[in-house]
Each structure stands twice: as C-alpha cells, then as structure tokens.
Length: 183
Image 1: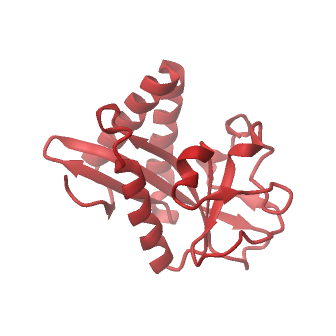
Image 2: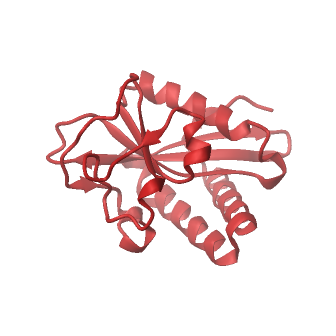
Image 3: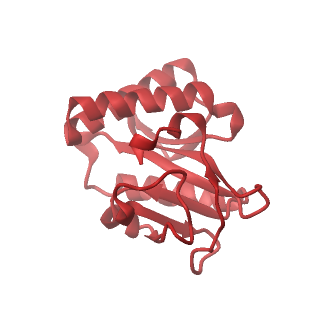
C-alpha cells in the first residue's frame, strides 16, 4: 500500500476517483446513490480544485483504494475560523472495515491542521467519524449550509482540540453542494 497523500489529480486520477465513489456508493446504497455521488465528485473535481478543494488518496499496485475530498465552508462574512467540509469519502469494497479509511482520515486531518485549517465538518455516519474525534454538531450553534434532514449526521472536529466553536451563519459551501436535497 502506498502512503496516504494529498494530490492534485490528473485527468486519469479524476476518472479513477469518480469510478471509486460510484462503485463504493453503489455497493452500499444502490445504483442511484452511486451515480449521484459519482456525479458530485465529478463536479467537485471540475469546479472546485482551484478554489481550495483538497483530495487525499491511498493507492496500491492495482490502483486507487480510498479517497476523501475536502471543500471550503465559509461562515458569516468569512472572518472566522478556516473551515472545511469533508465529503465524500470512499474505500473500495474489498478494503472496507480494515482501518484504511480511518488511517487516511487521520493523515488528512493532520495535514489540514498543519495547513492552518481550524475546523472540519461532515454530514455522515457518527459511528465512523466518531472514531476520528468528530463530535455531534448542533445546527443551531454551528449551522449547516442548508436545513438537515438527519441532524444527527452533522458533526465536526476542532483540529486544535477542544470543543466545537459557536459560529453564526450563513454558512456557504461550494457550488456542487448547493442543493438542499443533499442535506
């Protein structure tokens, strides 16, 4: 296994990322979800890389095994903490439940902290993200970009440690996430 690393994806790597997310989410949530997440990743890679999106991946001799994407979140007028949205994250089905995702996430969060990111938020499985230090986030004190259909999935981690900050909205995300139905 090659080390986890931040990449500036080439066109070949972008295609592999879309394929990874499509296959992983198809296996876990069905073909419609797989296609939707694959399209989301395609849009993030096409629209957001020059504007602060970050891609971390793990590969081995046969190809891409895991990836996680981060995009900027901006609260209020933008003078607050530097925040990122972790979404989406995927591990190939044959490598799931072996610690690869947790390991990739630990490397990515340490790197983001070193780059001056203060806060990472995600909207996902509390059991998975809780293993990496994510805490439940109250949308009243740490707003999401849109109303949440499953508020228990909104979680965050303050990269310097300690409690999650209280921030005022509005919270703005990158264009591929500007769809209330995703939230």
